[in-house]
Length: 370
Image (cartoon, rainbow, N blue to C red; front, top):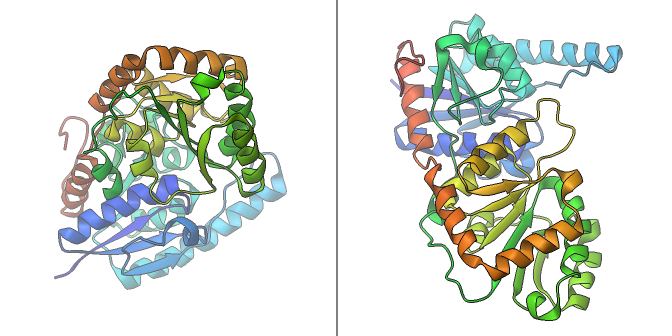
């Protein structure tokens, strides 16, 4: 009998990439994989190995507007009914969600149809959607050993780590770049991070003397509307830079770097740890649960990076930090080793093991491990 699993993920890279890694692992074990997601998957889900993709209606509730809250509830209700009909047709042995409100309708429908379910949370703080689902699903898989707001899951929590793509595993085999006097930087951070870094980096690097600037090599993600002004600024400074709105080979770029400057989403932090590269991490400000700060602290406590709030990362401070790294490159090599020490390259296999156990009817929890 064919084994079928439904993976549910919102259409962002942070949700889809771990789901994609699990999909490949399960397909290698003989599973048929279906994906439930939203329309945003057209951007990040092009390589997803789904036998069938189901676009499910959903929305994120907002308490700021009663009308918007009711509209979101109506969309989630339609998504639930849509999911229930789909599940009766597909008949999966298990349903796995990767966070975000697009996973709520199919996971709730699966619970009501008595299909084994797993909610995976990549962050060091359990997200609001997963908090809603935690008491209902069969198991909650986490990336980190300590997770905020985890009490709702009770004894169902199992730390598996956050699955990373094969490209990240491949990049993890690349040795830290030798010290040649150069400093290779990779800078990225999503839409909001890209704008902040596009404003910050040219000003900070302009404060370095010409000899230090000549030792820099930069790969930087920029929003399309910022590309030309950032390229022009680096050109004036005489800095070698490769700029683009998106790099498909970002894991390889990270592996070729000495230092990363980035936001601290869960996927970013986990990939930095698996590859083993140090980072100056700038959590997205204003997040309700401060999940990016919690993620970054995991790497920072291990000695694999530095957490700097956005309000504190001025051009002056960044210039001083880079000057210090140029003077003592051994600090970065040591931080790279510390980052790698907390990486979980086996996370996808651990999560795949959990899926097969839950699909087989096994009860899991903190006492059983994986």
